[in-house]
Amino acid sequence: MSVYPSDVGADVSWPVEATRRMNRMYRRQRHIYDGTRRYYLLGRDQLIADLRPAAGANVLEIGCGTGRNLVLAARLHPEARFFGIDVSTEMLTSAISAISRRGLADRIRLAHGDGTAFDPQALFGVPTFDYVMISYSLSMIPDWRRVLQAAVTRLKPGGRLHIVDFGDLERLPNVARALLRRWLALFDVTPRDDLERVLSAMADATGAHVKFERPFRGYAQCAVLTLPPQARTP
Image (cartoon, rainbow, N blue to C red; front, side, top):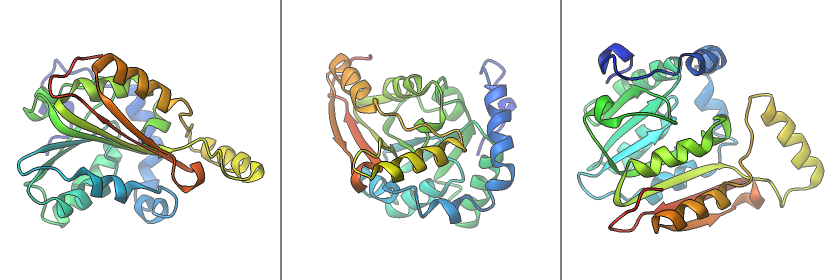
């Protein structure tokens, strides 16, 4: 499992400042991350169940964090191969440990990478993926639109992009909505209220199909973008 830039060649550009910022945030939090986030990162397990990859399919997670989603996905879909990138080396340390403990190191590969600009061929020797999943990461990445574009351009024709993240909370009481947004802001989390619009524009540009839902009274937003068999890049 590759983690550091020297593992993949000197031509890869590494987001040094982003890595430092996320490492500061997660240096201690990573030890309790999975235990605490299970109560409010809703919809992750449904995203993983909905993947249903074919045998031999390649699945990438952008912002893989502690590896929790990759471990669950690898157990649920044992005939697929999984890959993960994260900008935080602290989180990748936890992910490597979790994957090794569960005996999945031969099916899950990790690399240190920036979701806005990464080269999967250099990182993994894999140019494109059948599926890309992004779980509660877009709301923490300032240039999240570039992440979406990077994800789509690294999908195979007919591939699918699966997303779950915080929604605009539109069906929650106003007080609860205001308090929750204020609490999320403490962790540099900003719900991407125009995610559906951006994905729809990308679908128009690529000929893709988008399915979009806002479950849990708008607490979460879930999307699946499916490229046509002969995909056009946005």
